[in-house]
Length: 115
Image (cartoon, rainbow, N blue to C red; front, side, top):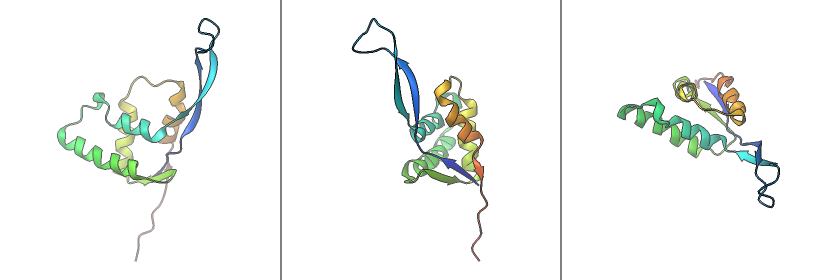
């Protein structure tokens, strides 16, 4: 099993200053919505999901959407689905580095079986 950090983080971007549209860009800080980004990647058209795979992907998406905490524990097969989605996507930008590192380096956790 893997533990995945879903907590949003802040990113800095250069944007045009609305008060001075012809002037120099300014730096703006925005929240990076981790959970929403993962959900979008899981349904990217490039994955070419079949009907059955789409249903399985949606089950995992519901699990992610309903997670109330900042971390979620995923079964190996669930983690593999998320990992495949980021591996298949092309077009990441610098602000996506932390997300990709979180997924690639998700902590392996041992689960105790109940007796």
